[in-house]
Amino acid sequence: MIDVSILGATGMIGQRFIELLADHPWFRIKSVFASEKKRGKKYKDGAQWVLESDMPESVKELPILSISEDKPERIILSSLPSEIAFDIEEMLSKEGYFIFSNASSHRYDEFVPIVVPEVNPDHIEAVRYQGRIGFIVTNPNCSTTGLVLTLKPILNEFGIKEVIVFTMQAISGAGFPGVPSLSILDNVIPYIEKEEGKIKIETKKILGRFDEKFIPKDFKVYARSNRVMVRDGHMEVVFLKTERDASIEEFKRSFMEFKGIPQKIDLPSAPKNPIILFDEPDRPQPLFDRLRGRGMSVSVGRVKRLRKGFSPLLFFLIIP
Image (cartoon, rainbow, N blue to C red; front, side, top):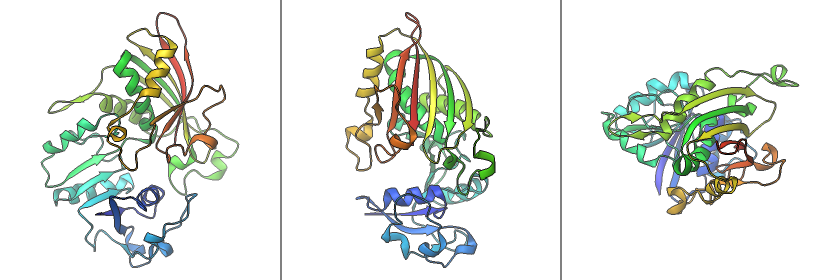
């Protein structure tokens, strides 16, 4: 077993890390870190558990540690808030720790990869150029994750000229306690700060290539983000212009047959099908589809070709 530490362990993302790793055959949660004021408390007393699942027994009695006072394991999963993540992750990586970060603080650094394992595992090569004893690897913004996963098979087979995406993002995306109830009840908020820029930059970086530097993909990306009154499960409406014409059956097949390295080597936590395709006109829906593949599959529906001979596509997707 490989021991790992979790930074920001009492927050919503930290809790997801714990949920997914609680029974993992390869990794063991050895220590949990949170704010200085919680140091010394048992995890069960210092964390307000907000997930649908029960708090795993394996972490309940772990003492909450502080990064200013205590030493973590060599491998660290970081769910620190972005405003404090930069300095802490920078310090730890220079000291030889291997950081896998959910924060946006380092995503746009020159040699820090934004990795979606099914999409761009080769970008991990970039860590060799970081000049640190350890390294930092990041994951994308939540809306970007499901988008690039569905764009990858289309890019591989048909090429992409342009992407237009409208997001309808759940309130959980704002963290806990999140959006004030009087702001979101009976309402849609048609703007999420910095979200649209993240989608544009990250999508092109992830789907680009690394050759001693990151070379972003050169297609156009347009994004508009909205916060909606859904607890979990972001929805996106995506319009694409492809380089090569193809039938709707070919586009659907590219979704259904897509597998990444995690599926090919049968990683224990990888979903069997990273993309799940629906033919029903009223699916996918967040309430029913957000936990497919243990929350790591992207559900796609209403795939349509909007103009014969030009191959713009329309589809809906759910990002858990």
